[in-house]
Image 1 (tube, rainbow, N blue to C red):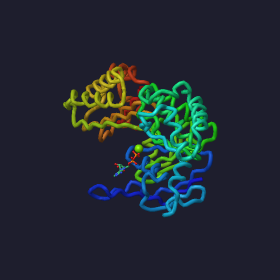
Image 2 (image 1 turned 45 degrees about the vertical axis):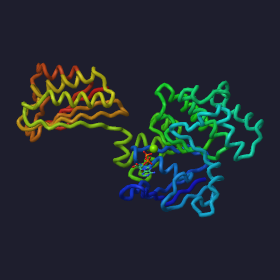
Image 3 (image 1 turned 120 degrees about the horizontal axis):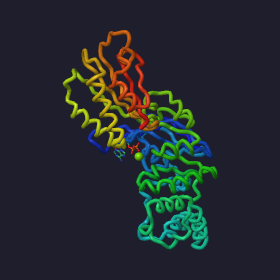
Image 4 (image 1 turned 120 degrees about the vertical axis):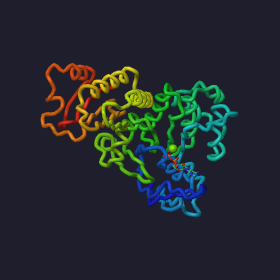
Length: 362
Ligand code: ADP
Ligand code: MG
């Protein structure tokens, strides 16, 4: 249905040219639900906007049903009718009622009569659960309701494909699911869609294929299982697992413990780890650095938090560790510090002598 070859987009409006899409290649077939994920600033929005020519590509080809949409004589209006787009911020006309928002384009562009357009609009409003809001104004609706109206408005043009650009990221968290439910319903009806989203569970459930965009290309693509459970490339892995890392190198036992706690606290609050886990981390650091690690030379401490798995790992490494038996194995059986740390965490191991790994389920 859509074929993209060697798509490039370079912006020239800044001080120096900025290449956002370097070489994007893909095919989207009828009935597919493609999710596009990736770090922000990697060109996901630009890619969608190039597909319906809200943005002019710098180079490359885009074919839709065999028509070259970048040809000088391409009918951009007809193209946009085939491709609906739903934006982050709804883009409803604030001075028009909900039903007028929906009927405007079908009446003007498809030539539908007022009665036909309204009949269809009401059906669509019913479908998105808002049959009673036809006469309301947008500012009487919640964000989630506005976004459902925006979807109904898009459907009113009978598009062959709908492009969604982060449809839930401007919403209050309580309203995300009502919008995702509508998109899920469209997916189950076989609507062809391309969806940029950060809602990973949703992406996993709804997509036929996932594109991971990174650095201006489709860096890795696959089924949801391939991308989420078995990503092949490093950048995909770290994006999917969203591993957050905080590292320290402590030269000797007289390091600044309170500065370290401050950094750990900021790390915890940044990633939504509560006071309870922060308290445990503090205890573990105290015991490990005062009693357990030998500190013959420097000790490194790495804290990894995987948002996906909800696990937090602390790795303490004694640099230049030479003893063969290991820190845990070599300790006395009644070492109180070790018992304390063992009681705080869910698992404590020493994969190589001198490196102690402590795992929490956050
Ligand atoms: P994403 O949607 O993946 O977050 P975008 O496609 O919005 O990424 O943006 C990619 C990059 O292109 C960003 O660095 C952004 O600042 C830049 N960009 C987007 N639109 C324009 C524009 N109209 N002019 C100049 N730079 C732009
Ligand atoms: Mg974007």
